[in-house]
Length: 463
Ligand code: NDP
Image (cartoon, rainbow, N blue to C red; front, side):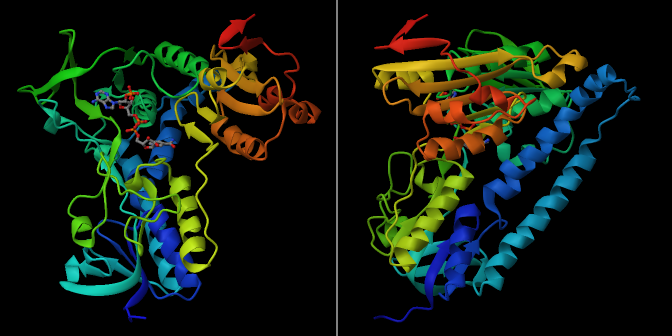
């Protein structure tokens, strides 16, 4: 066997890459990992982690308002953007350090450099102007926001990468997109007191999620004061003399705002990575093509996470990393399982979901039962907050299998995480019915809806 500098070289220090590097090093493999920006990648540095912190920050005005119904008098509140940005920075720097030191403590080597493939076993460490060789190579370079270059004036827009570090909180923002990022940031900015407009090309925000939760979230966001324009796209963005932006819509309306954010999906980071030199094939969106074991067409080169454009979620990248380790280093070939992935949108209210939507289940199963509860969460009652929660469970009438669960309301993400176990285990509605409720909780609805709200047979709803 040829001798290489490393058993494994990982390109990209995000959640997937770091996990693979750390675990492989822990197995005694000679491992190196290169990251050109900051260890932690999108999730830690400019994604999930700072986003959740900003969600918390944006919720305080509602907490202050709700406090009155519980007898509290809250004094005048004031928000300081700089404090939030600085505190966020401190926390992500801490996590960044843990990500890097985790690899090093396991015995791996870290490079702060861009790394480029030279051939199928050779990587150039750009910052050091040298090459190293590796038996196995893992590409985990993630993705970046779609810059939407076809839009005239796109250069005036901001993206999720830089949104956390704006020099100041805008007074107004227009956000394009109807996916996770657009919806989450519309709620964050609105909560922080920014006049917020969401512009989405489709009929209803959050395509691919269950219709009922989409509709109720839309209504609730509008009631809070977020303007949502569906069936709309930008035709151009122009900078005014005063520095503000004109966002021209297809119907001729012009929205004036301090910032325009584009959240139109993310594209894989595969440019100038040396993929051609190594002979690695890419797909239509530039993604690295892999088989079911995350192996590329080159047998010693693998790819995981967003760069493969399968399911763009951090826990999925980590799962793919663990499967890669089993396959490449533990002699236990393991395919990542991309079915029944629980997910949450950190909108306000929060959305948590796992399994099939009613629409998908209705088209794939002869008959389904839909159990649905819409109610005001207890916490909102004394607060005087007229905000509804929705819990919906989809069941296959024939097998009684729970096919999907969809929740909109406080802690929906936490609930979806636990429901993910139940659905993964293939539990039936009868198992749910046998489960004792915890009272008073919102989640008790999940186990106390004994009669279907309606049935859908051969795609037709029977009330
Ligand atoms: P999404 O895929 O969620 O949404 C992209 C949105 O942009 C969709 O509404 C899409 O419309 C719209 N769009 C795409 N192209 C155009 C176009 N040319 N013109 C107008 N609209 C367009 O991507 P995001 O950018 O919101 O997030 C990227 C990924 O990051 C997500 O897929 C998600 O997996 C991950 N993420 C996860 C989070 C979480 O777990 N909470 C949080 C944030 C991100 P349409 O629906 O019609 O296709």
